[in-house]
Length: 211
Length: 211
DNA sequence: CAACTCATGTGAAGGGTCTTTACATCATGC
DNA sequence: GCATGATGTAAAGACCCTTCACATGAGTTG
Image (cartoon, rainbow over all chains, first blue to last red; front, side, top):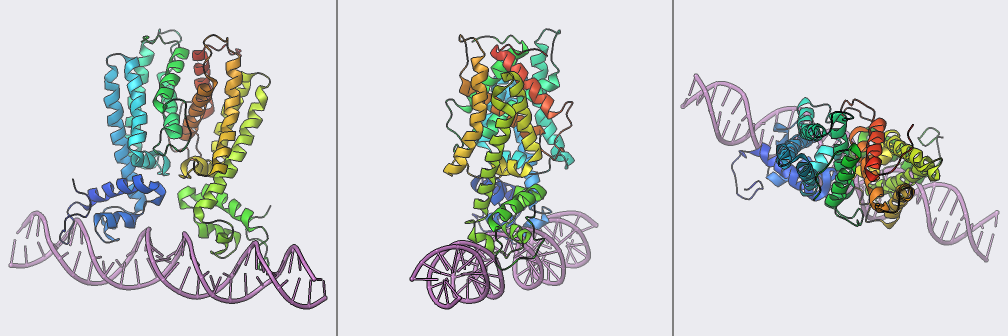
């Protein structure tokens, strides 16, 4: 793949829109969401600083597109991990948590754009709905977890989904980012989250299969 | 209080350092951590764009100072809420969670600088230690919670502290920020966190006094 | 009290980014 | 072929970042 300015090209780039998105990912990963500049992306793609404006209203719109792509990939990664709750919802939930952390670790550019760059997720309908779809995976998992409980005293699945989201997100944000400089932990983020979710499930009264 | 450029002043400002910190807080709260500029802060304080360089190496250092102040205020707010676990550790823990959320809601500028602006907390020793002191409040709370459990099967207090931190931080980051545009919830962030912590504590096997 | 010194603030300047505008190039369809 | 619209360029104004030489005046010292 070649998104940079390796080969010479004619007056027209041919695929500038995609090239700019990839440039943004590369640059955000390198220098953080704040350090990334529109002109940088143009330079990276080998075009003039004005060219990006043919494809995005401004830097913020490019950032929002990156966040949108991020939510789509995030949803795909979570859905792949959840795999419809196979072989059982608890093993699948464990994979789901690990996938959440893995995404935050391996895709810092997407994660920043989605959660830290101040992109107004609620404003853009497309972005909002992409976020909803990603959350829907968690929601589906919570449904199956709740369905495994006796109907009496069964908690609202939405609440359980929000709780799982908060645990995964908190763990990822505090301990699971690439920098690692944040804190020396006695255990890995994945172990920490797994233990946390297990305690939480026990608190819900769920019988998790012991291993 | 007057940190703006209300009254005229002589050649020297008299308290520029503090004025710039307050300007930064004001501007970050208004326009976000990314939108805040060094020149803006100077204008806000009524001095030339070069003046801030007499007090801070660059924009990043000012941001780090804001984060430092934030951690100090955060620690104070958490300690006040925890109040050494009075009247009982569970009521105090509930206050602690609410204080965490309240800080994120009422002090978005501090919160952004501390957790979202990409300030390298691990790098600066003063910043790192301020963060540690804030966390120490959670750690102390976890100690008392664990002490209320039967010694057999008592979990590591550090792990419990990290779990509580992750829950509070995840809830605050996802649902508790000022914008509110993020998601319509069936319950308030405070209720959500309280329920989550209660479930978690039950999972630990703690007997929380019923109300 | 006068002179000195140093912290603090200014103005100007170079270099970078953001964004718009008029213009250049080329792909596409008729 | 040729018109047309999409895409890229160059240039320009406004703003920010940062440094430098210089100005000011507060505190110290004899």
